[in-house]
Image (cartoon, rainbow, N blue to C red; front, top):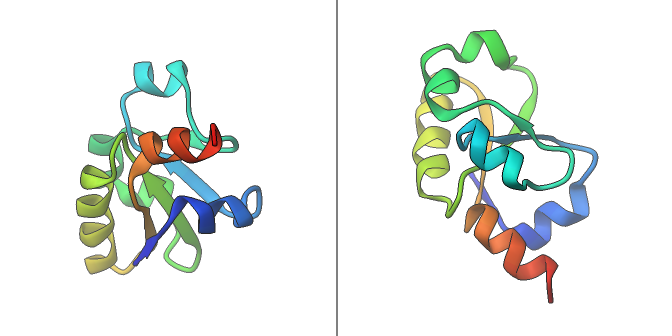
Length: 96
């Protein structure tokens, strides 16, 4: 499933938000309340980070990698939403 940045903004801080970019990018700036779990860690060991009965909202820089990650995690039984447009879309919408 997908969610827009504007829809997500209405849900913060009530959702579990995961920034799947690398640690450096995360430290340079992220969406408020997001935790950092880099893509490779999340996709190879989701059971270490996620519970199947909870919802998660994930994003990357532009939304492409997080959409792939969402699809893969959904196929494994996790409830995951992709933030369309990723961090760049968040920056664009939060400065307007």
